[in-house]
Image (tube, rainbow, N blue to C red; front, side):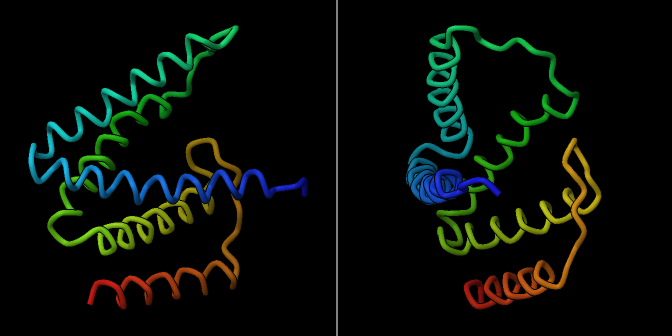
Length: 142
C-alpha cells in the first residue's frame, strides 16, 4: 500500500466540510427554505467547479458511465435532505444517521461490485464496524 496519509487527510477534510456545510445549510433552511438552500448550495458549487474545470489545461470530456449522470440528482437528495433534517432534528442526529446510511450503502456497493466498484467481501471487521455504527446511531438519536 502506498502512503495513504494524504488521502486520509483529504477524507478528514471532507468530513469536516460535511459538518460545516450541514450547519450552514440548516441555518439557511430556517430562513429561506429547502429549495433556496439547495439552489444556493448547488449554484455556488457549480460556479466554482466550472471555473476549476475551465482553468485546467485540458478539461476532460471523456464519456461517462450511465450511472455517472445520477451523481447530480443524488447530490440534490443529500443536500436537500441534510438541509431539511438538520434544523428539525439537530445536526449531530442528522449526520450520524447520514453517515450510518452511507456506510451501509457503501458496504452493499462494495460487496456486490455495483457501479464499477471492485467487489470486496464482507469480513468480521466490517460486520463489527456496522454493529458499532448502529449502536452509535442509537446512542445519539435516543
